[in-house]
Amino acid sequence: MEALYKRIRTRARQIVSSFPTPDFYREKADAITMSGQLMAADPHISQLQKVVAPHLADDFGHGLQHADKVSLEAGALVLIEGRDHPWSQATIHRLVLLVQSAGLLHDIRRKKKDHAVKGARFAPQLLTTLPFNAQEVAQICLAIQNHEAFKETVDADSPQTKLISDCLYDADKFRWGPDNFTDTLWEMVSFLNPSLEQFLAHYPKGMQGLEKIKPTFRTPTGKQYGPQFIDIGIAIGEALYEVILDEFVD
Image (cartoon, rainbow, N blue to C red):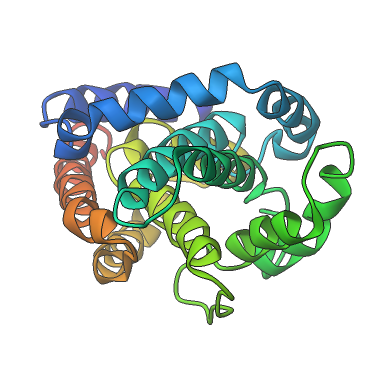
């Protein structure tokens, strides 16, 4: 089955490349670049990446690559949304560090039931060597606990805490667009190794899940750009389903 899914993944990536890139990447390129620069320049992020990596290995398609991308775009969202608050640049950059740290940690318990809650409880153990105070650790953990879709959330105690939480959620759900069909889905398939019949039987339910995520984005920027991520993902998924039936089903 592995060879079959490699062929299907190749076709999926070809389909993805034929679709437009989400507008977020073009219209908010400056914020994404700045987030990347802050991420690369901060030694604490590099340290946390090394600490987190063993906990994300073979993680249902939610490994370090996924965590890095969520961290990058969550940081960009903080930079964008932070402009609407009367905060100093130093404060906003500190919030970027916090949300990027939450992004790296958010799936450390991905294989467990209620992984967001369990991840929030475990995260402080991985933050002990980093220069975060108790309030900042709590902010990171609340964001982790609140990142799972269709679950009750914990209320934030400040606008800064809410921003970290909401930006992490939206950046994570951006991955439900094209990324789902270039990487995440196939890493999950590699782990679970379903038959093609089982894969196709679950496919419609997965597509319904994509549709349900559209109204859940939390920040103004997420609400503006997130549904397009999902719409592109749905269109890719529908095109791929037809290709699988035409090319891979006898």
